[in-house]
Length: 344
Ligand SMILES: [Zn+2]
Image (cartoon, rainbow, N blue to C red; front, side, top):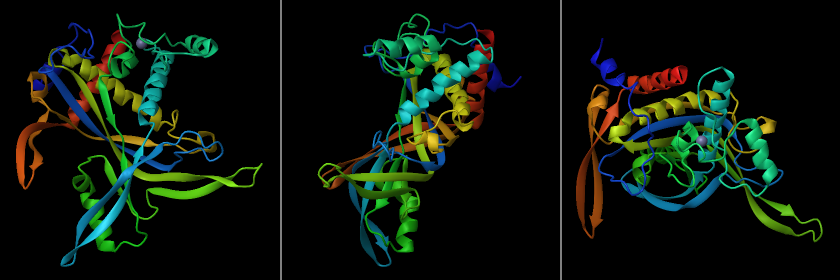
């Protein structure tokens, strides 16, 4: 048997007490595994055209960058948009995955209710009838939703960094500038989930007016957005090193939940009934910020991660290692999850 398997499979009888760090506990033994994901969607409607509800694209600001252009530099102003609603979308996928697995006969605890508070009792009752339990009522033996997303008494053990779409304010950018921005956008913005949208390629924005029927005045400028393309996001899984097995199961559960997205059961954004919002998610790579025994067999590379702090005209640098993990690590996390739900 390979070393990899031995190290990874020694879990079965360990204490499975999850996994979500309490704020008061020490952080020195925390570790973080980051998974970079790609989300591909040909037609994501961040805003419902008819009701104007649910704007999932938030303009978060503008940045002016000087980029090389022949022998000089060119100043380009970019608008930055953040894709909102990704966390809720992933949570919905996780919830529906649990129901699907229950339906298929697997042994898994039903999910926490999506909301902590229900102003309308009938909605709570409807959720309970569907099989949800009151959020946090599972804390003695937490369901995977509570393990990942937490609740009122427990902080979440995952952090989701959504896609950031950078769009040039100028309609006509030289091809060279476009190519430079496409290639260097994550470094230029210091955001590893950034993508550069050329023209209308990834993010199409239009401003339009709504006419107030009583006054015949245009009352609002609404931004209409349409997303199409490949977007990046990251999910951090956080836990204590001595509870790493639970974190691996959480990762396996997250991977399993992606089936629910890729098979079309859960859509992103608005206008879902008109066929928008079908997306496909793939995992690109995983890395850890700590090195410990059960991970060593999966580490493919130590990355020297440089951080800079500008102090006036000087630059201070700090090197912190990160550890790239093989794809086999993610496969084994998924297998670990499947084993857990088979055995109960
Ligand atoms: Zn629960």
